[in-house]
Length: 221
Image (cartoon, rainbow, N blue to C red; front, side):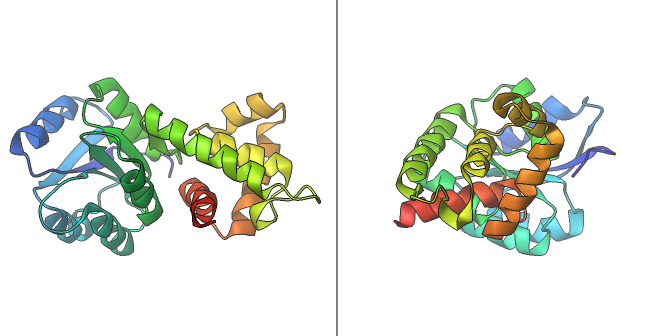
């Protein structure tokens, strides 16, 4: 989703002070439009349809509806909405479940305002944003999976080639097409072609689904 107009932002947290704090941070940002706030996951699912936010900042720990279930419901009602989970601390399994449910970001609440703004802008430009410690855990899982799935014919899970798996690893890190092209020494056009092939082979619609698919299969086995 390319940024053409202001990013419509919905904040979901059961702490009033945190909601107001985030709102005050972005009130003067020219490309952010604060469209509403919710104090519960259930309220967020109801508001998401009427407000049509581009990005939802969703607290991981709230009373009532589980955040993972909330993500699923929101994505069913507003598929285009990007969801960034805000967590008090890194929780590998909950983060993985959040991404699997449809979230495109997972950051800690101690993130500074500049990085949070970059995260909001990033998910609107097809990037998956994760806290560095969690990202390293995902990458390590991915590497183990790659070694386990490497067959004699040179193909991997889902029929991915070695080059496609390499590109998928970079996608796990949140790299852009340009960054991947620089890393693997090919053109951005070639990278885009590989990514389309990856999506087609594993039935993914976007980068997050592609990464989660591979990691999920690795965990299952």
